[in-house]
Image (cartoon, rainbow over all chains, first blue to last red; front, side, top):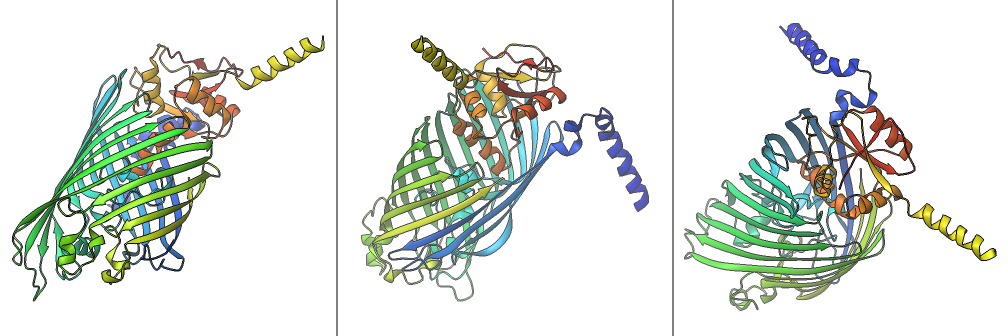
Length: 398
Length: 137
């Protein structure tokens, strides 16, 4: 039986590829339909107070390493298969494991003269704002640390990719390019950092994600000189308490709405995003139902002094509850009021040494601690409201 | 006389810097005139098939190659970093393919000439009957 399979496979391969090979065109053999790409990034952090990506306070932490390798294969014109493995080590939040970042079968359903419609199934990246789908690839990010009020690193596992499917459509016209995505799937987030972010450090149970949807509409003008996008997500997490858990069962819904706009000129670039996020805490045995709204926005300007040297400046603000911007309610509960907000001024310099190597450095002056990771700052009463962050990054891609 | 020689020298220098670039295709590609918008869709990998249904094979030079920079400005009216942004999103979110990078203009010419359904670009000095000019209006 095995031998038969082998022979059959051989015949099939000859049938599929024999025709092509007999033409004797070296640039058109079957393996040309395979493409491999990858990246590797190492970051270093130093902070005046508070820890980011390991013990950065009064020291230097090499706590963030990201290595990715992807492969894509097109067996038929209408079908593209792609897979990416990601190794990530991030302070005490992520100990360093290899995960399947995406694994996608992309089927083109409809081919129009100026557009296309298709579906993607498997583990699909979540479209959210300008940077989320490639958030772990340093080359595609404007800065070492993305604006944390929108692209939270500590709750990233909810945002990275989901197991399910995506319907997509895009269309190019004289008046620009329009793209649409609707993703439905199971987010991968059930880690402790999300739990402590949502329910506080004393929660001992587990979060279980429900199927969630994420959708994005984007519009690009003049080959991407102007980019506009609207993204929306609907996430629901069920809390499963542990034995003797005082919190009891309940659920939390998170619904972020994000507006994005970007100008990409020859030398000058300007980017802004605004996030409005509804949060619902329902059916928890220990507390009455309550809702609140989080808000974040940033404005970022960049300038290319030389084709390979770029300077960048950004202001980023986040309020975890717009009815308690100064954190009085947190203080009443015995937590530092500065956990309610974070305002971050940053400036950085990026040097693309070659098209494969890039190095950059940046400085942040942060007021507030809303996006600090709990795992790196176990005692929140010891965190400081005003702090400095220095970061250095070296990245390679192919 | 010296002034004239100097002017000729200046013209020569200037011309050698600002040479034009042409989009070229393999002769198997159907002949038709396309809009700037369609040409951009081909190089941003959004248009994947020729009018005869064959899959488009896109080839480019490296981002920092001077001819690549001239091509993006002259023929696509874009900047290299705009193309890079689109390609990176495709590669690192797993939603398709990006152009194959060739090492030199000589390699570009050979590849386009020998690969059915291929499209690429060259400086206008590189004329060769094995490839055809692609007309983008």
